[in-house]
Amino acid sequence: MPTAPGEPQIELAGVRKVFGESIVAVAGADLTVEDGELFAILGPSGSGKTTVLRMIAGFEQPTAGTITLGGVDVTDLPARRRDVNTVFQEYALFPHMTVAQNVEYGMKVRGVAKAERRTRTAEALEMVRLDEYGPRKPAQLSGGQRQRVALARALVGRPRVLLLDEPLGALDLKLREQMQLELKAIQREVGITFVIVTHDQDEALTLCDRLAVFNDGRIEQVGKARDVYQSPVNRFVADFVGTSNVLDGEAARAIVGRPGMFAVRPEHIAVRAAGGGATPGSRTVEATVSEVIYAGPTTRVAAVAQAVGQSDVTLTATVLNAAASLPDDLRHGATVTLTWPDSAVHDLTN
Image 1 (tube, rainbow, N blue to C red):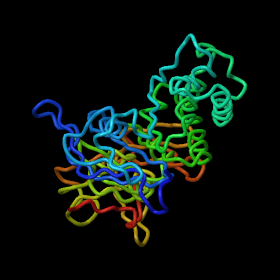
Image 2 (image 1 turned 180 degrees about the horizontal axis):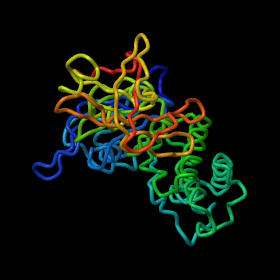
Image 3 (image 1 turned 30 degrees about the horizontal axis):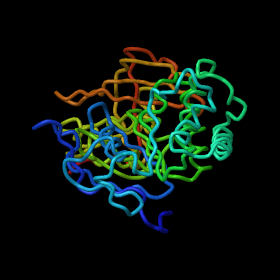
């Protein structure tokens, strides 16, 4: 049954999971995922993100709370009765079967007629751009191709929701970046709800429409990727989603000019020759360079801010090489001026 217009596809209300008598994996999660959304659950190891995914799939039962799919309470339904498929990092393809046999296996078990199995398998392989690979065995495929076979196998059943648990974690960096774009294109084409669990902040920001940041079993922030990155609600989110220079105590008073806790993203900080003056609406600080890292399109500069009393602090700037000029004498021990606009200072004070 299709989801009614405006009706959430997934709803978690007060979902809690306790293992044993005292290990709280998820501490009361409230979460809504819209129909057709590409949603990311982001967090470090042990934050509860995979446990949430397993509860949505039906592999784990919540200790408390309710889980709703398409308006139907599925909290007590077993996994086989939920209109959900899951793609795991390991892919779990049958090595003795061909690609086509792997994709159609689940339909065969459910008794789908052979003609329909073949038609739907061909459609699924075409969807993931592997329509000519049906006769091959998994061992004859690259890592990215095996990932796409696993995706086709999950999509061929036409689920309401597709759950992906660290789906690109086994791939090298270049292939992972390529697959991020392909995965986003496939989701847009099929139009069903994707929920991706990942610890990779760049992957979550690249892929998702919205994301939820988990920490220690709790949701710290939910929102659009841009909003979470630009307006983190607390220090954990500022540090975990991207990289931030977080200033508090005396460092904040000396560098920002007022007490509290503040975050400044490294890409907002410019590096100038020592003595470079401030422009209206900006802050500056003299600093001593401790590290210069050339990273192709960018240069990362770490520098220790001066004149901060007992609270000297290292600030990191990320400069786009094609768009900015750096001081000629940029090396360890050099004195530079760091500057950033007042608008780049995000207040984390609660």
